[in-house]
Image 1 (cartoon, helix red, strand yellow):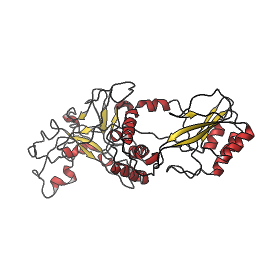
Image 2 (cartoon, rainbow, N blue to C red; image 1 turned 90 degrees about the vertical axis):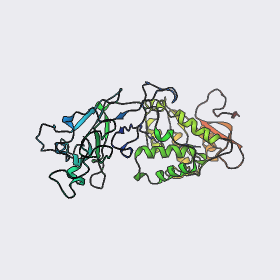
Image 3 (cartoon, rainbow, N blue to C red; image 1 turned 180 degrees about the vertical axis):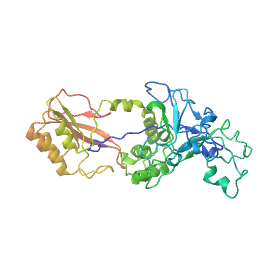
Image 4 (tube, helix red, strand yellow; image 1 turned 180 degrees about the horizontal axis):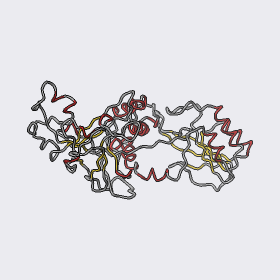
Length: 400
């Protein structure tokens, strides 16, 4: 398959979610494993470690209080027992510290629970207490309580994962707040961690339903997070017929597709990021990119889409007019270039006009639903080198 002629880049973010410990399993968040290896080559040679945040290390002086409303979570609180709470650095993880707490408001400088966040509490009040009646026990005045029937009502003990403390997570999104109110955890001091896998990729199976779900995400990206959209692109490229993102589900009877998917998982390591660290990425018209970076010592590997083809992620069909514009530009470049394309009369005319060399290579293609067949492909160069074996596995070098 030809690549999109616009140079595009996609970043896949591996994000660590940490398990919140609260009164029941419904309050738990998924956790991602991490590893110590500095530069792992594969997924198999790393050790994983799970981290559970229990909130047990938070001192009583920093818990929500002095009542179950949690007045110390807001500006204007002047008490000292407990103290005003904004953020906390948790040392539950052996390899790094985790920071959580109240979100900063949109103006900056103030931290209030109404902006969303994570408050730490041990209140466990499931009914009205002395001095309160009506709906008090399930109103905002009791917002820092947890309804945990495994603990004695109003004892404020043993309502957490392994002790009395738990996190009270509050957050929402709407047209006005955006994401300011979403509760979150982060690594202390902006530390970076390396993860040995991305959950969505690791759990991906060769499945028609999974392929359909990825297609849905790709069709309606505005409703999904960046990591989900990145996974969808990856899954569609690996599971679609001929790797066409808008193509049908690809399958065979020999296990080749499932093997392709397994290999893609194994190859999805930090080595991909390391390769990109030495690359300049552009996302604009390829003709502009070639003209911008052209120099006498430049080498342009030009791999446009096949003429009049559309693999589902081009901005438009690459037509004969586009090809001629490309050839006209290649006539003027100062550096060397190699252009790949199937046999095409227009290319042959320009090659004869400019003394370009056409290397003809045969290879076997299987993207057709018909039987496998031999296809001739051209590598067009404005320089001459000693003949070499085919660049394509199993291909046969035919020469000029």
